[in-house]
Amino acid sequence: MAGKNGTTEQGKNDEKKDFSPIYRCKTESKYVTTLGLDQADKSKSGIGSHKVMLIAAIVSALSVLNFGFILEYAAPAIPQLMHPSVGVLQLNADSSAWFGSLVLAGALAGGLFSGHLMENYGRQSTLILLSIPSTAGWLCIIYAQSVQSLYFGRILTGFSVGMATMAYPIYISEISTVELRGFFGSFFQIGVTTGYVLGAALSMGINWNYLALVGQIIATILGIGMIFMPETPRWLLAQGYRKSGVNSLQRLRGANSHINYELAEIEDNLDNVEPFSYTELFTTNLRKPFFLSVGLASFQQLCGINAVLPFCVYIFNQAGFENGNLVNLIASLSQFSASIAVSVFIDRFGRVLLLTVTGAAMCITCFTFGLYFQLTSQYDINLNWLAMISIFVYFVAFNAGWGGLPMLVISEILPSRARGGVGGLCTGIGWSVGFIISYNFIPLSNAITSQGVFWIFSAANLLATFFVFFLVPETKGKTLEQIELIFNSDKVEGKRVTEV
Image (cartoon, rainbow, N blue to C red; front, side):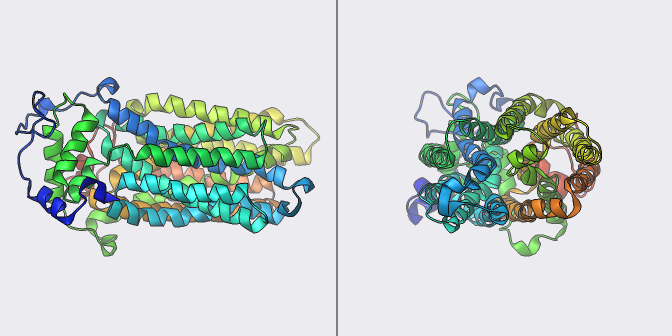
């Protein structure tokens, strides 16, 4: 699909030969440029001056809204599909575990495949293409005639989840200005939690197959909408489409914005890199960002969210709540509220502080939720208030930090030449951890009790908190090119850079 920016090989070669300096001249056509390298000419940071960038961020966020809707879908659908009235589609305890977790198996494959797509066909094209397996998966569920069809639908929709996991953060990080990258990056979790709320709210009034139809509509709108959004300037310039890259950057920053300094910085960085090979993963420059990325992706799953979320209604019912769907909706709304709040604080407090504080909060709440199960199993007391506070604070903490920030940080710390491929690999590793946890959640709860499982999650969150605090560098307020220097420069390699 990259051909939309250079439909012939000759056209691409012509762009590669275009070494003309750049400057946007308001009185001429949009392709006329001259040189200016004053840093004072950097584009304005206000959202109002970047309308195209804002629209692109919102439209592309449909990919993560679809992501959230897919994950949320299992919570209300599983209890309905376990009812005898659905006939041949009825799920039992084992098949419901597969229905809830197969989406993560699909995400594993989608995450790995997205790396290839992003590197070879572009970030925008990957976001367009992910609507295909999502649409197909929802149709399999809507018209299912067997449990196997439901499984296949969940795998396909999960495939699109894996593709969106890294494609959206990379797309956002490469189209955003330094000042707005954190704000737009927070759209990841806002989109996901919007999907949660939409799924939970609609499940109060419609059944599982009509709910799947809503998911199919979201995927279709995403695919059509992204066709009209710009490809990232960094990918276009890296592929040799210089004129298209310049035009994309100008379109994103605004017709009257100066793009000279930013373009020079991007091109200077691209001039000093070699093509990426996976054999370099353990070399000096890539070893640490790869290790940190794998750690962030894994701890995002080890915190337990994708064990709790698909079986949310089941957990609330086990905890003694009569209307699990209503409590699930309230929990989803609390997650959405936290995601909105973090968009305000992310560039004020930084990534490291938010991840550390929210990791500690999840550690405490998983422990207290386990304590609830322990006490109610031993004594005849009503501690529903403890369960409610624990799970709600857990959801708020996750969405204020570990929901979207790990993927944002991964998209920032990986070097541009490896961002797509290695980002996809890390996503695949993370989702493989998520699949193992999700599938084994109910069997493990039966084997070591629910409190035992939540205490394991508590320990994992404690490890995640230490991991971030001691090892992850702060990326707030830095360009992607400056972040690369943290790992590539001998002078600063290994040093912790923190801004609060």
